[in-house]
Structure formats: structure tokens, C-alpha cells
Image 1 (cartoon, rainbow, N blue to C red):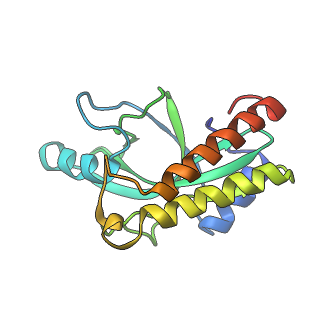
Image 2 (image 1 turned 60 degrees about the vertical axis):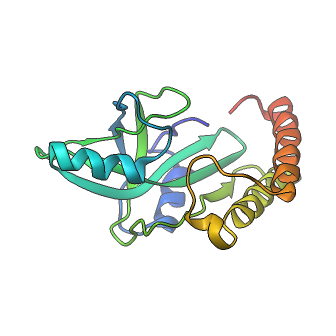
Length: 178
């Protein structure tokens, strides 16, 4: 997935549907060393204890050109001087993210599913998104909703992961890499 251009019409309308009245902004990424990947909701509050500032909630906006756009619930650090920065390590390096502040949402210890919208009308894209939504539901049944990091997955999640990989390969062949 890539950081989309915030000035594209489909990005603007997608963000308006998620959080009316908020504007997407580019936020620089400066990940902290020796912290777990993608654990913003624990990393940012711990960092604030020793460095001050605030935790800001919102959505990282990603897209796969011609395929789909996605919003991932996320938090970033607002330094005491007001500068916004993403301090959470990610699997792939990025210089910046596209961040949609959401003053109405807070992290309350439970996973929040990504918001996905197809750009293509292709049936494979719709199947991929449906599987991603089912995967989230499966991964958040009962006590799983409170677990983070490495978890033991069910047989159904393994099946979904396999199907998503197969569809992902087909999408790459059809549309190019994310």
C-alpha cells in the first residue's frame, strides 16, 4: 500500500465520509528504535510520559492504485511544540503518512477494523475486501478482541489468509503491485 495524494478527488471524498469536517494532512514518520511494529496505541502514551505532548487519534490513509483505498485507525504524537509526528515503526519504511484526524474516536483497548472502499469495480477487489472484513471479525471474537501482537489464529483465519494471498497475487497480475 502507498500513501495517496491528498488532493485527489477520491481521497478527499473517502476522508469526508470517514470524518466529516476533518482535513487530511501529511505527517512525517520518525519511528522509535526497538519498539514493536504497528503498536501505536501503546508506544505513543509511553513516549508522552518521558517527552510530554499529546496523543492524537485518527486514520492513516493508504491506497493501492486502481484497486482500493483504506483507512487504518492510528495514533500519532503531538510534540509539546505542536509538531505532529508518527513515531510508530512499520514493516515498510515511509517518510510520511497521510493522516486524517478524528476528534470523535478514542482507542479503548479493542481493535477497530480498517475502512476499505474499492476504487475498481472488479469482483476480485470486492472479494478481497470482504475477506479482510471477515478476517477482522474472526480475529476479534470473544477474548481475541483484547489481544495484540502475536496471537494464535483459528483454522478459519488461516483459510482467509490463504484466500487473501491468492486474490492478492491475482490483483497484482491485473493491476500491478500495491
